[in-house]
Length: 458
Image 1 (cartoon, helix red, strand yellow):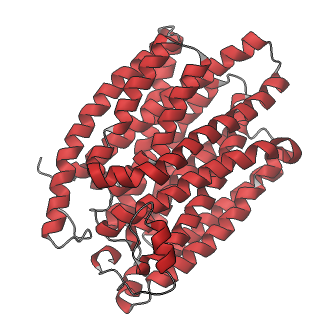
Image 2 (image 1 turned 90 degrees about the vertical axis):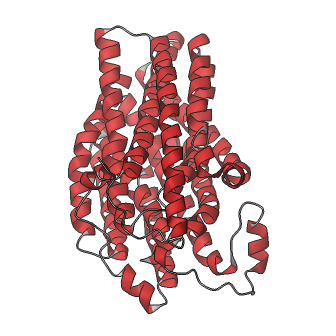
Image 3 (image 1 turned 90 degrees about the horizontal axis):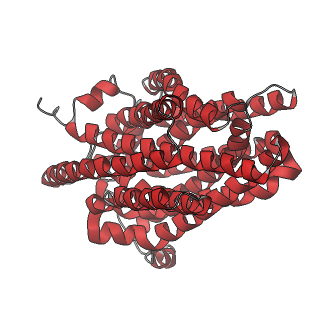
């Protein structure tokens, strides 16, 4: 597999200036410049398209009857829907090579966006279906992006260049939320859907260029031609303690973050009542607020990704980076508990999301470097679908029980997230030990990541 092969030989050339420029953020060797820059561009475009879609998605779902509750319940239902999405994706991954897998997935998403645009203009209420589709899109497309990056880089390369590629993702998220706001009124939500559709076509071209560049040798070409899908999925995760800990971390991140989004949306609904906004006014104000909210979270994420992520990895390693999220959760939700106002909730969520988009995203992706190719494409997809949405499903249950049965106010939900932050911290401690063990084993085997591990002992 690609991760078992030696990286291309470095040679001086025209890329030396680019290497020096990139060295401000991370160490990139001359032979890695082409693919790293293209994947960074790919990350910019993919995340920009996703945030365009998020700005469209939020007003459509929150303007529906039920508002925040409807969104929370739809998020929970998405966990069920993703069962079918995952098995369909895995069936395709078992039959085609990685390039065709990526091509077919992107073309399908482009077709869906065009269809939603047409249905919206026909007057069909697409708020809930579109919300569900964007949830599937974000997990499938973005997980596929990082699986491809994990597949073409060795663990040693990934720890270095992921900081650069992560910069692209952060910049893309920033651009998407920045450009979406002025597009809301002139284009309208339905016409805006065609912008990400066009962007996906460009992303497909980029992937094909990177794939061609990384498969010049016959050995790499042969490996890339093999279908990456395996026979397992969730079963593969339960056989390996390391994968189970990754799943636990992803579950905690999504559960806490989804709870936090409900807290924010509930606070916004209260502001609507305070200001006496009607449905139309609230819809426009909400779209602009969400665009600003995403913008500031992504701007902070870009700053962290540019100047902090690579240094965190250098001095604290991946294991140290994992501690940052739970500590932010404990501090920010404690602040919301003590000062339950919109400004405090907004600041806390912006800080939480900025870390998730930058340092923590790179750390989560780096956890997959010392894993096999099947685990990268199949187990990762299972975690990024089932486990992520399991967090949403649990959050939906928490919202229902807390809101409908226990009559929780916003403060009670923030206190719950503080408690979850403490549990999260304990999971990170356990992962730190297992990651140290896994990387030591990889180093003993010569730094390769592609060998199949033996299942963890019961």
